[in-house]
Length: 407
Image 1 (cartoon, rainbow, N blue to C red):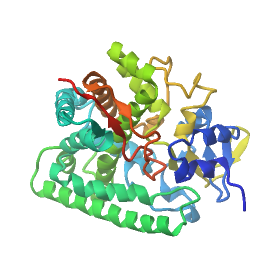
Image 2 (cartoon, rainbow, N blue to C red; image 1 turned 30 degrees about the horizontal axis):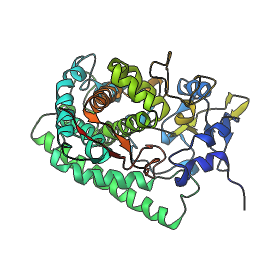
Image 3 (cartoon, rainbow, N blue to C red; image 1 turned 180 degrees about the vertical axis):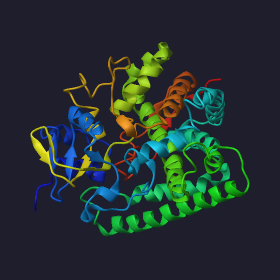
């Protein structure tokens, strides 16, 4: 039996809760070739260099045919290169923030606070809660639906589709197991249902304008012209999917980290202003997007003593880079006021997540109010059960015992 590489071991579901020992081994070879001809990059300096390198493409059409694969975000801005990417991103961000709507995120703060308070109020009288189901999921999914104009009553439907899509994606040695192949097939079907649901919603807004970003996008005929229908649908999938999934993981991991490290929890109790840098540290420690797998080399790239040949796929291990001891001192320890915390939790360069300010605000409010109002929280199971997905890595459930909810 061939011994598995650290990369393969890090991708096994049994190691989802703690891939970090395997990343430590992986970083000894910063740029590692896989048997299929792709390259894994695991160190901070090399990942940042590639994120800013215009010889690296995000466009699957520029990859060799043997490296094509199903991608739920195909046709969206994260699978485009400049100048096409810049045009479509500009069409989207004009409805989401600066320069056209500079106060949009700040104006959402009262609604985020109201919903956070409501969710915590609903926990009154309980002594055990599932932080994911009762808090980390409903907060960001409700907010993004209101921003986009997605009916709140549709949340249970598309939540199941997205969960199936996540469970169906596997980059590791278990990808060809019969059960995982079944999940993958179902995941492709569910992505199709999500696309059709959003295409129908966009059609409704074309016929009858309504509230939210989707309606604004279909009626936008500004200087750049209207976005093509297929691109609109693809970007709608991205906005709904990424608009809450990463925040769910970030909120859950923030609470998990606090409860694993009582001194961090106590710091936030006594110095609530530390929640702003603290959320950056939680994101560094437990990256919501752990791996990104869609890049490829447009020409030969020399990096860290290795040549990535033209056409080769490149996998960026953000979760490893964010714990690289060459960049972060004591990287496995949470330091709420860590100086110069330039993590890659939201990527960098042209594909930097434009929803990052919203995710930050949601998590800052959620964490601060959890610390202020939840009495004596204790982890019931550590590690908690994790989702199967290696890319959007996060707890499926996070069960916490509490003594009550303060007013």
